[in-house]
Amino acid sequence: MIEKILLISLVLFMIAIALLLYRVIVGPSMPDRAIGLDTIGVNLISSIAIVSILLKTKAFLEAILILGILAFIGTIAFSKYIERGVIVERKSNR
Amino acid sequence: MNVSQIVEWVAVLMILFGSIISVVSAFGMIRLPDVYTRSHAATKSATLSVLACLSGAFIYFWSHDGYVSIRLILGIIFVFITAPVAGHLVCRAAYRSRVPLAEGSGEDLLKPVLFGDEVTVPEHNEETLIEREQKE
Image (cartoon, rainbow over all chains, first blue to last red; front, top):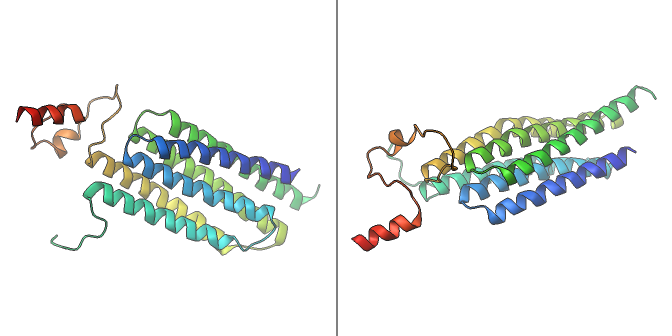
């Protein structure tokens, strides 16, 4: 019974990721796509936690931390690129 | 039904609650009209869903295996800190790169503060730019 509920919640997360993929592909502006990719990363984190419960292993728990850090850094890089046109600023005049 | 089974059921129901909240936030991402309103659905409810899901996984591993996972606690704290910061930065970048508000929005008080000293073009779509180039 517990496994069935975990499978149902995994399917719900996959439905959420599919709906967000629609927003990433169609999205009228670039910040829409950045927000959609950030939310896809967050949903992947929680689905990895469910998969590690289903497979009865603890080896995937590092991947949660790494994916969280990568999603955050990717969103920061996207927003800086959208705002200023560059990611890494060379001149520091202020 | 002893105590550990009850705790496992609580953890699994927390995970189910998180997945339902995640689907609700995905529907918000589809149906809301604007970047600024979509960021509400993307940051607030998605953060709640991932917090509920990771807390459920932590409680499940704690009661089932007796294993206190430091990595899950670190993941919970990291997501809880960084998701609002990421939403705020994307919204700031969207406003500064002149993504228009949705139709039917209220008065925009930030526009004369940020873009007040520029030449006021009423709409920033491509037709007005093309018309301006043709006039020049």
